[in-house]
Length: 221
Image (cartoon, rainbow, N blue to C red; front, side, top):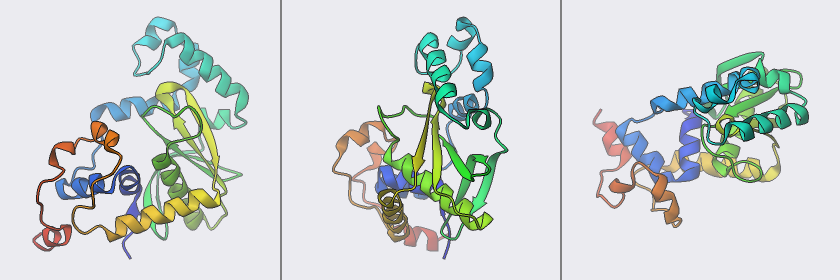
């Protein structure tokens, strides 16, 4: 069975219909600003020392003074702060039994994957789509290394937020549901009932357009 990508899981967790449109358009490359924001996650020490004017020029989402306070707080609270700044491995392609994708940082002993998000964090915890990708990364890494992985990190570097999550039964169940959803997509899935998501979807203008099934499109290639 073909492995499902992390990006497909993330899109399907947000909206399966969005995932479908990305497949049809073959649109999986991130926008140019994504890499610039993601690079912040590898420069925490530098950003902590930066002057406020320089920091204001970075792609951060909050006031520079608040940003540095939150980074300082993360440095105090997280045992793996040093690894957040200088991970043992970065941008690692992992290929598990069911899914594959890029793990932005890999911590060793204990083995933990880090997923870096360029978005805004929720007030507590992590967004459901990021939780699902973090579980996928942990499972793929565990499969490759033949080691148990019980937790993961999600970083929101534009907001100076780092959060560790445990791979709970609930999180694993959400991952399995999303994996099934991706594998069952064959044509546009039903529209989401949460129409607030449409405000943040690049494919909102396409929803409702009669489209051939994904299988028919693939068979013509």
